[in-house]
Image (cartoon, rainbow, N blue to C red; front, side, top):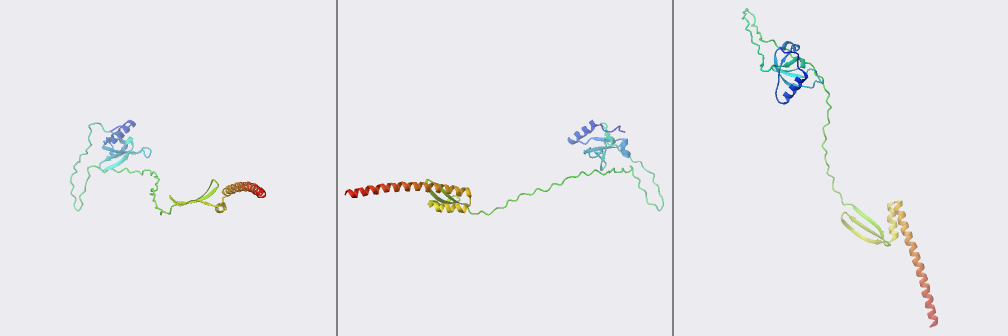
Length: 225
């Protein structure tokens, strides 16, 4: 009969053997109860942090969990223990059903509740559905510009020019800016108009002075003639 159970090194060896596709043979120790001395195959090592009985052994048609102390490595060259059936004497009793005697007493299944580990259910990933937006008309751009003393307006839709820059009067430019209702833009336009007005007044004064000189000269020439 086997000894004291599996050591930590033997458990690691069994885990490596399982990873290599082998199923090590073990023999049940006295702490395993009625199956002591019989043999089985280790088919799985579960998580020892969840349960002390993490050595899953195939015994007959059953696969039951045991603790490392319940099993020990079978000696090399040891086959599966076969229990020979002992014939029972036939007893004939009138009006009594024949009794069936099993060669080996049934092995009780050691089923203990395993702790339930809560598993957080992950929501199914939603596939992003791209909704095609209807294509709208191209954008429209209207530009009011000032350069070299002239105000111009141009219009463009997308890459197409609807109206080439054409000259507008300062008053019309001021009305267009007033529709935007942006104080900073309106003040800039008013400053430009004020500067143009002052320059025009200076030119007008200069032209008036030149015209007065020309008229005086013409009057002198008429008197001389």
